[in-house]
Image (cartoon, rainbow, N blue to C red; front, top):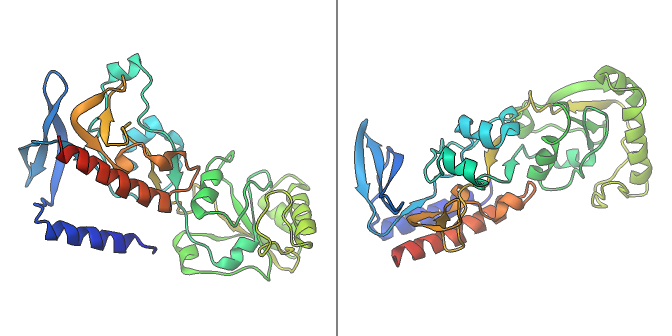
Length: 315
C-alpha cells in the first residue's frame, strides 16, 4: 500500500548499478572502536561464525526501529508493550551509551513513538470513537496513525467506534485487525448498558455529536464538513477496538541523536568519529509528529540518509 515498494525498487536498482557489495544473512553484533571511541568497523555473524569488517570511512547505522527488541521497548516506551509488532527489525543496541553514561547525563536516544492501525472503510469515518468512559477523544477523519496514537493514550484498553445502520460497513483490513461488533441495540441506551458504561455517558456523547452533525458540523473536534452525519438510524453498534484485543501494528520513531549531516552524538553531544545514522535508527523529524509519519518518515530517511552517506564518503 502506498509508495514504499516503488521507492525501494528504485533504490535497489541504483545499488545494483553502482556495483555495491551486499551481504545478506549477516547480523551486526557490535561496533569496533578504539580508546578514543573512534569507530573502525563492526563484528558480524555470517553462517554462524563471527567476522570482522573494517570501515575505512565510517559505519552508517540504518537498521530501522527497535520495536522487536522488547527489552529496549520496556525501557524506553513501556506503553507500547500493549500493541502488536509490525517492524521486523530486532535492532541491537549499536551506538548506545553505557549504563554509566546514561546515569551521568540524560540519555536522549528514544523519544516520540508511533502506532499504526488499519485503514477503515471510508464510511466508518462518519462514526465516532469513544474511550472506556464513553467520551470522544479525536476527530475520526484525521491520519490513521494519529487516531491510534491518541487511542493508546486513553485510560484503560477499551476503545469503541460507534456506527449506525447507515454508516456501518466491513472491509478486509477490519477483519485483519480483528475488529468485531462489541455491542448492538435499537437505541444508544441499549448499547451503553451492554458495554457496561456509566449511565448516560455514551448517550450524552452521541446526543451532543448528533446535534452538531445535523448542521453538518463537529463543534468539539472539528471533523471536516463532509463527514458529520447524525448517528440516528437503528440498529446501532459499537465496534470493539480494544488495544489488548485488536491488532494495532506498531513501530518506533526515534533513535540515536545525530547532527543533520548524519554524525552520531554521544551523551555530551560530541560527534563520535566514524559513526553515522539515518532513518528510524536516528532521532529524526517524525519523533515529534504526534502520530504522523508516512511522508515525513520517507523524506526524513531519504534526505538525511543521503546526508549521512555524503558525509561519511568525504571523511
